[in-house]
Length: 239
Image (tube, rainbow, N blue to C red):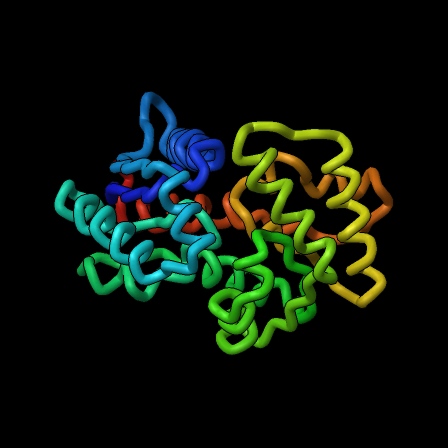
């Protein structure tokens, strides 16, 4: 079994989901007392969030690059950044390591392409919804047309992530807002929705959409990332 390197803490709420899901899925596959081989470094998210606000992306990338280098030195065979937003600095992080970085947008784009979908709604931080590093990657590598909400909705989605979900708060009013936002994008012809922030799956699931009368597939990037990581870790190995 390969060792998985996790750059976590952004936020720790979603990193805990990564840890739990990775171990459960490895155990489900191998049985017995098997669990995932994981090297995890969890950063102080307040420091990273401040760099985001100040648009000091190069400094943020340098910090995560050092973390990735540490994980490789500790024995990680490949690396995951446990957040969508910080994939803005993924290429910079890759310059610090020789092992592969499993890009969250790539595994998500691959899954969508396998299902032959083309027009997808995206929810995430404002950075993820508005900046080219994510939407252009899906468009250019996977020929996916990305639809995002209007500015006021993007701002509220972002606020809920940082002020609520990153602190473990899942409020009914926020769930209703997200579902209403998805409904507005459905009117624009989206075929599915990407939960493009690793905390959003704490708040809404595909079942929530169905109960709200929204017949749209949900692509939870956290779970897709985990699924691919387990596949990679167990490739050509049964122990």
